[in-house]
Image (cartoon, rainbow, N blue to C red; front, side, top):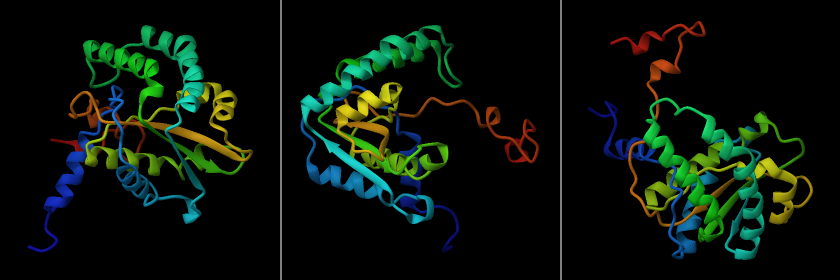
Length: 219
């Protein structure tokens, strides 16, 4: 039956994908460089445009630098993200109670952003960041999130610092021509991994005509 159906390793990958929740409550305990290296190696195995590998990653442990970025991160919560959470309905597949818990976790991460033992700041070299260039960094981000999950580490994709991009990137010490696209705070999670909260495929997936139900979802 060679080639018929997924093997055990493939099943494990799918389970990891399905349980890679945003882990915003992280312990301050140290994370070994050897594990962070595995995470980075997973990131650089990702797809990127033309295999140009313009990605650059900062591994930040310096608390003063993290605190300098955290100030802008908190300002973004207070002025933009917090009010948006307060006025928004729960997203598909998430109850109002879970959405409230998510907001609480967002607030916790904001207050303890610098306490995460390691940050990986995901950057690209090149001018004029846009959604096309982002295609050469976000696959690496997802690979690193999955690697964290496989290693028992918690993390979350956050881009909130970009609401104050110039100030936050100055605090990070990025040179001209290098732009950040995400920060991954990494640490040992306080909570447990579990299924992600998402809506049904029928809410998002269409067939040949946009808005038309895809036949593959018919039961």
